[in-house]
Amino acid sequence: MEGDRLKRIGIAGGGLGGLLLARLLRLYSPHLELVVYERDEGLVSRAQGYQIGINTEGSKPLDSLNDPRIHSLLAENAYIDSFHVCDRNVKTLALLIGFGGKGRGGGFVHRYKLREALGGPIDDGVIQWSKRVTGYTERDNGVVVRFEDGTTDIVDFLVGADGANSIIRKQRAPQVKYEPIPEIYSVFAALSGGEFPSLGEIPTLDSAMQKSMLRLLGRNGSSALLNVAENKENGERALWWSFSFRSSSKPNFDNPESLKLLALHLAKGYHHELAAVVAKSSFVSGWQMKTSSFPSSYMDVLNANRGMGRVTLLGDAAHAMTTQAGLGANTAFLDALDLQQRLETVVGTGKIV
View 1 (tube, rainbow, N blue to C red):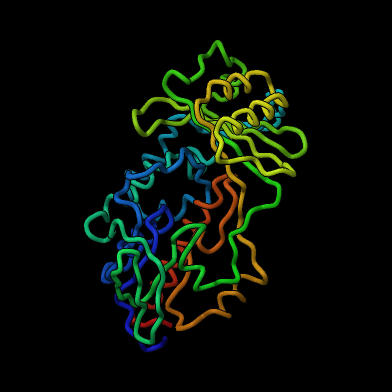
View 2 (view 1 turned 120 degrees about the vertical axis):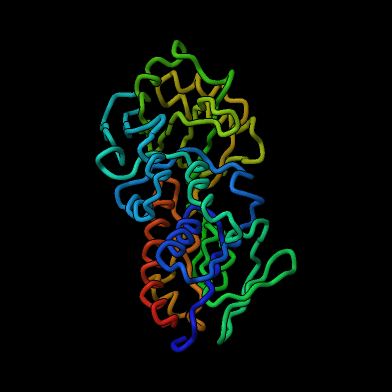
C-alpha cells in the first residue's frame, strides 16, 4: 500500500529463481532485510536434476550479478556445448553449435552447481533451512508467513518462488491450476558407474552426443532425449535418457519394472542402440507432464486476487512449464530480474506502490 515502508522482503522457496532474486536484491538494494524460506535442510541436501540450458535471455539476469563463479560455470560446459536434433535413426536434422555457449551468452550448467553458486554467498543467515511454508495472512501493515513447524514470521512483502506446486499461488491466484497435460507422459533414468555403456555398445549414439544434448524425434510426436552429465555423488559421468510420448492409457508410475518394459517397447521405434541403453538401466521412473492453465489472462487473475498488494509470484509458482528447453529456469531468472528492478524503483523512498 502506498505510504508503507518497505524494509523486509520474504522469499518462499530457495530454488534457482528464488535464490537469484535474493542475490539481486542484496546486490542492488543492500539496505533491505532479506529472508529466504526453504524446505530443504541445505543447498545440497537433495537431488537437483542434471544439466539445464541457459539461453541468451536467461543468462542476462545471471550476468547482472557479476559473479566470477557463475561466469565460470556457464563457460565451463563440461560435457555439453551444443544441441543435436536427429530423426529416430540418428540422422542429423539440426545441430545448434554453441547453443547458449561461448560468444552467445548462457551455456549448459549442472543444476546443483548453479544452486550452490547462487546460494553460497547468502548462506549466512539469509536462508532459513527446513522452513516449509504452509500459508500466509496479508495485513495492512505486513504479511504473516506460516510454517509447518508451527512458527510464523512477518515481512513487508512476500514473493512466492515455491515451485510448480506452490502453496503461495493457491492463495494468491487460486484460478491458476497446475494440471496434467492429457495423455502426455515421460519415462526416464540415469546410468553411471558400471551401468554406463561403453563406446563399443553405442558408437552411433556416442558420436551424436559428442559435447551435445541429443534429441531424437520419433513417430506420432514422441521423442527421446539423451545427455551426458556429472554424477553429483562421485563426479563420474552419468548418461541420462528420457522418452516423451502420448498414450491413451496412463502408465503405472509406482512400478519401475513395468516402466522399464514400457521404455524398452518405446525404444523399438528408434535406433537399436537406444534399447541397449535402456536395458542397462537398473531403475526407471516416470511422470505425467504438467503445466499451468489459466482461465483468463494472467494479469486479470492477479488483479482479481490483489489483496493488499503485498504478495506476488515468481517462476514455476507463477507459470509452470514443461521440462522442454529449460524454459522454466530461464523464465524464472527473467522474473527475478524484472521483480528486482521493479522493487528497486520504490526502495529509494522505502514505499510500496
